[in-house]
Length: 375
Image (tube, rainbow, N blue to C red; front, side):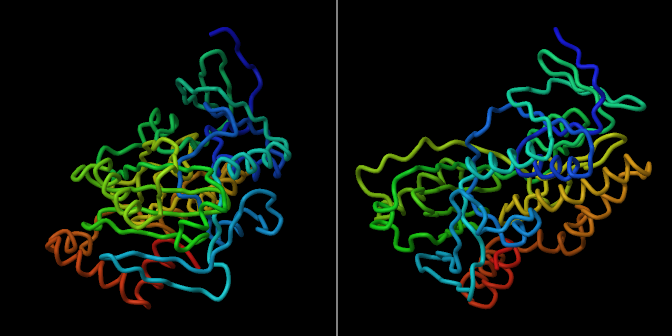
């Protein structure tokens, strides 16, 4: 290791996605000395279906009319169940389609503008927690801070090195592709251009999606469990898309890439320690069933920044942050209700899921507004 950085930062944030940039910006606005490290160079491709809810934009203090890049409001969404498409409508925009390549870079630049020192291409190799500080080791430098925030996604080094990851957590595996095809082509092939289409898996252990936004087509599938594999599920879904004309000859999709993340169900991660806390996907906060992670990432980052300020200014513990997360998302303990559901035969739970997708009120209230946070 060639360089030792002697500066003591108030906070080091590991990860530059929406969670990391949000917590860093909030802390900088409170006059804290913040360093943000990310192993990638921005802008970078981020696998995601790519939409943000109205509440997420409110939490970001971002007016969609002021966002200068791709943002597509939608007030209708389709769920395809057993070969039939069911539409749910709202009277105003229910959510917004974005391109994560653009969106994450925009948020990171916004954090820079408030004084956050952003260093990309820096891979964290180790972390040492001391009595009064934290030392971050990269390939070439050491960085010291009073506290560290883990915002590096599912494989965040802060979560891994602090021992916060449970071997029993529920992990979603995905295969996703986002391709710039052009608006004219997409309008000619997409039956519902500009609107998300969701396709629950036959066993309801995941779902696939087809989402056109601006010039882009976003396709993916995510599932829990290894049988059938996510690759087999993707192959089946692409067959459906070709048969329906949503993908036609001559369209070359970008290579599908895999991604994993944990959902907030049981055996949740330890999100605080003596001098660290975790936010967003690093904390495993993606919503159960839907896998929606941007909203919880931003919400948890706002809460984290408030508690870090109290920690730095008033020497308060970080326990309040954990309590707030538990209040919002639960504590991950298995309840009697969870045990009862596990005892139900799979065909029974699948039939219940079908009813919820087909019934207009249940679909809107529990699936879209509940699990996905849309509306």
